[in-house]
Image 1 (cartoon, helix red, strand yellow):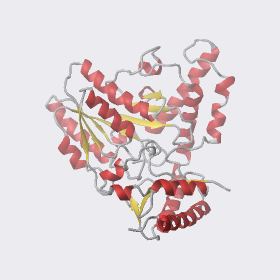
Image 2 (cartoon, rainbow, N blue to C red; image 1 turned 60 degrees about the vertical axis):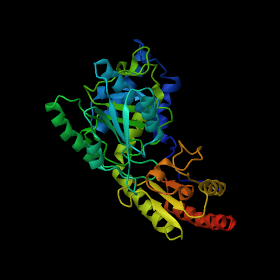
Image 3 (tube, helix red, strand yellow; image 1 turned 45 degrees about the horizontal axis):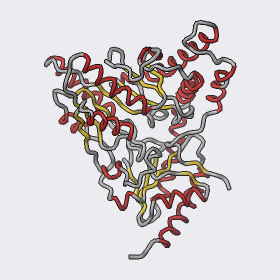
Image 4 (spheres, helix red, strand yellow; image 1 turned 90 degrees about the vertical axis):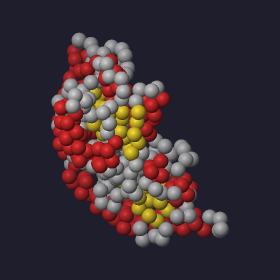
Length: 397
């Protein structure tokens, strides 16, 4: 049975070009980048080359890129490191603004900061499409607001948040705050699902922190990066030998850092064509699935990333649907892979006003650069058969 993988928002296979770039750094060029001998300096050069690739992609400087183990670590470093740095400068009250539909890495970090009494957090609502309001952000700011953190693309429903508009708002607010001697509001975005498809130039977007991970862009799991705008206060959260510009200690994972740099380079070279191709397949998938009765598209109908398509299906249990699709060779998810072990309804769909009963029938398709039209058509056909079967099996009330 041929498998059709439609869960690229959960993770991606390592690109052959990425793997090829990584291979020498496992056994031949295995030096520790902190050492002064030739093998160590060879490793250091490889790290700095990757740093340069990512910096160029983001429109940043090399000294603004910190390699981490994941986007989750990047979020923890930016948020906790910022508050610690501000506290060490004498500030005592901190307010963070985020949204109710953020990734768990963001939400749990904020909850932890609240629990410790380090910050008050405002979790803004979203509309029925999962979109946060720029006006709501402006209205939520206080004299103690130091950070706004809004994800670029929602990982469950694909809605693109108005990141550039938020950046412009904060630039305007910060001009006033400078006059009033109030702390500057910094801006973080989780760009995990946006890197391959959207403009991630940090200056055009007005971003101070940007987190990303490798395994969503055809690099390996276990490597990520954090953009930190030069001059932004930040204190390391991992003590040790002072690697990564003294902001993230620990011997650098050279092969994986090389892989991340190569993946970003490969992605940048073919972004326009890839977006066009995947957007076309997305439209095909949406148009065909919505022909079925009792199926509703979730997320914004237009302002959505090209690779994510999410539906809720009436009278169907999402977990059963995913398992039966898997048995038929179709790999999809019930939402975010990071929260799929929970029996609770999706916090994203709940925030969008979807009932708990209906949200349990959610299913997410996510496309990749190898997805074909035939795979979409085959997946839709099998999807229809299984939905019909599950509805016949459902208890009649």
